[in-house]
Image 1 (tube, one colour):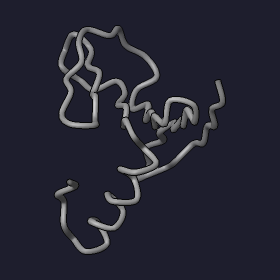
Image 2 (cartoon, one colour):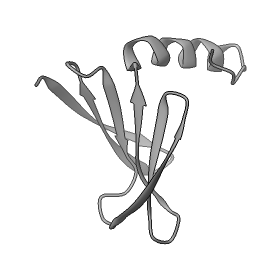
Image 3 (cartoon, helix red, strand yellow):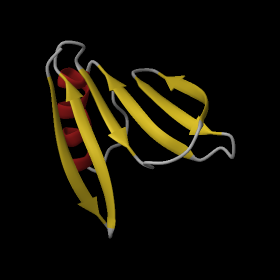
Length: 82
């Protein structure tokens, strides 16, 4: 399986981002520590939470198609991705 990782700093917070090319899934790690409790799926985004309801990481399915649409929508100040 092919994957790539980067470290992204936003507003003094660092997020680890991994792209799994074979599965076309982008994973954004929000917290390095914590025990996974449950996940919620909304469309092509799955957010994984700890027992306190804090997000640990999220997965964006069909990332090669979704991410460009998200970036385009943000540039236009729109938030809906079809």
